[in-house]
Image 1: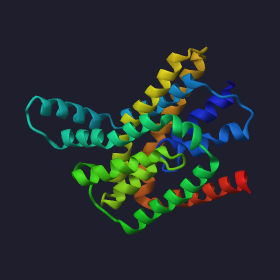
Image 2 (image 1 turned 60 degrees about the vertical axis):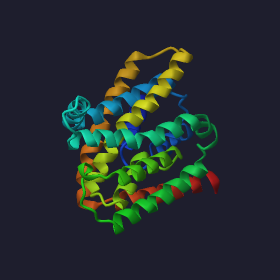
Image 3 (image 1 turned 30 degrees about the horizontal axis):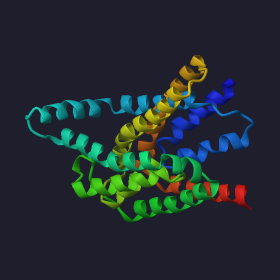
Length: 266
């Protein structure tokens, strides 16, 4: 890989992983618009590691409280809001984990078409716009109920459809059950941690089963760039949605989806 490819792929991954705009929709354009060769599984794992590091560092205080409170709860010292939040994150991850493992090959081989991605961008983008427009909730991630978590977790499984956006569909569901914009986004980001671990783990298994030469310098740079861009994305996204809401991302999704359909199918 040349350095331009490393930079572009790392920044695109870092930004699109957490914005409600679908990382798969953007990454699929890279080989189409360039003559770059496939970056390989090792680089994919490095990019996921960067994104994972960013969200863990950003929410380090919350994660530490969740871990220590969960240990205390298991030890019989009672369940507080942090331990409950840790349980909600785990519970909401189960549907996407199970369905993702069962349908991984089907999704990889048969659903990564630009037609599906284009319609998913538009359809789920409009749904996000509706949820943001109609539902003005005030609850934070610490005020979730079991029913809310089951709805959000079920919605997250829809993110396996390319073009849906994991953050987009979970924020949509969270807004629909009455969460605030910031609360919905924060819970979505916390949900990304186990999902990125699962996705990166699958890629790592594939890497170990078919060893390939690794450019360690490119992997290190890719990890750092992906992590920095993802961290900045999380920070400024939370700032933007409090001022402008989700509508700018809805407009972008609809226009991008329409362009994809026109570019590839008309």
